[in-house]
Each structure stands twice: as C-alpha cells, then as structure tokens.
Length: 71
Image 1 (cartoon, helix red, strand yellow):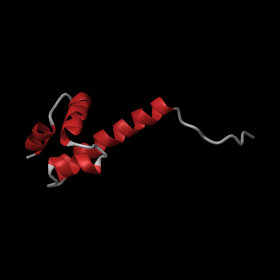
Image 2: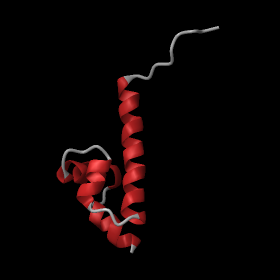
Image 3: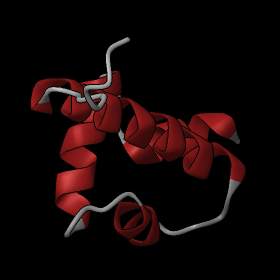
C-alpha cells in the first residue's frame, strides 16, 4: 500500500485554479448583480484589469459582454 501523500504539481494546481475561476466568473456574471470589481476581488484578483485579461484569455470574450448576453 502506498502511504505517500497525494501531491499535485504546481502547473496542475494552476490549471485547476484557472478552471475554477473561469466557472465562478461565468456564474457571477450571469447569475448575480455583483460589480466587476467585486467579482475580480472574489476570484482573488488584485484589480479589475487582471480579471478582465484572464477572462478574455479563457473565453475570448469580455466580462461585460458575457453579462450583457445573459440579459
């Protein structure tokens, strides 16, 4: 029986964190009335620009564009 602790590599942790942030961002943008600055803070970003850049990398869209499309 292997008793070594379960370890994740740092690159894998970053991928998991980015995926979770993307899912939460989409939820907050489409299912809440939080301001973009609040969403950025909730997801652990220091500022809205960093969040905007990351969201655009994930989806090819802007956070405000996703919110507007959700109605």
